[in-house]
Length: 382
Image 1 (cartoon, rainbow, N blue to C red):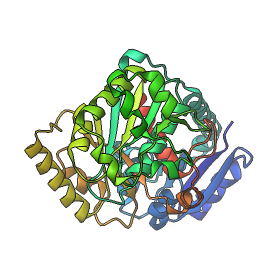
Image 2: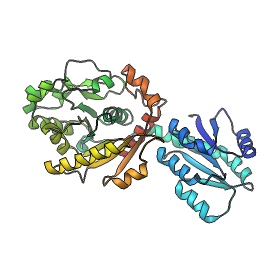
Image 3: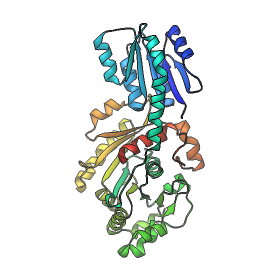
Image 4: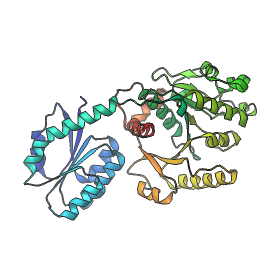
């Protein structure tokens, strides 16, 4: 089974040593930090189990909430020196699944740890083996959009499509609608002269065979990818009818159609948005991105594009250094936040520089970015 990463937040040397001596190091990897380092460590790497040992730090509730916000799958245990009911209630509400009272229940906690670890390993194993079943009649269109460049929507769209394909039996196609510049072919390491523009001559009788003859099959996940022509003049040959026919054929032929949309709004993008079942607006946690989102909402209202029923927010590049916190953003927006993706410059850098896909197989060690996308993808599949 997978070796668990445990984060022990403690300033109590005696309790720390007892816990360290009780754990089997061949089953777990444990890191000990002080309370002021919680945000940095959780941002740097996801931990399976986080143990908080009571201290005088008044921000323990906020720390637990932060851990659960960044990684809801993390199991949080609190070792308290207080028996006050209201304090323990606040700890539980913040997200702690277990709590023990020190010093009376320290031996109980140590004796129960092997069972806690085993149960968590079983949970992880069952989630990794979980396979989703789809039927062709339920084909849906998922569009990733952001009005602000550099939001990471192309990387999110491609990794989401790959993850769904790797971890389910769904038939998935990824379409790059950035007609002028493209980009998906670089992220997915695809080299081909064929693009969605090659479907223009057969658009009136378009079917699944036509699409598969032009699309490229990504080598690791077998995801179908329709790349952009990367030609500004190509927009002169494409119209709203082409976009509608293409997407409706994809809906009939695939379980999921994932679209990476360019930032500018034109008639082609507007048509794609109207055809979409779900629109995921990728937002960076900063004031300029919020202003662009507001302009986007106003423009869609003028164009008659209804966002109320199908638009949701993905907050990307979340870190402790962000100007705006998740709680602040939720209060400022009228659309629901369905996912938060950690900023993972170190993990992503080598993939981006080498032009390698983020996901390559179902069972593999995932960087924090990929783990967050997998969590979001599984929520969508369910």
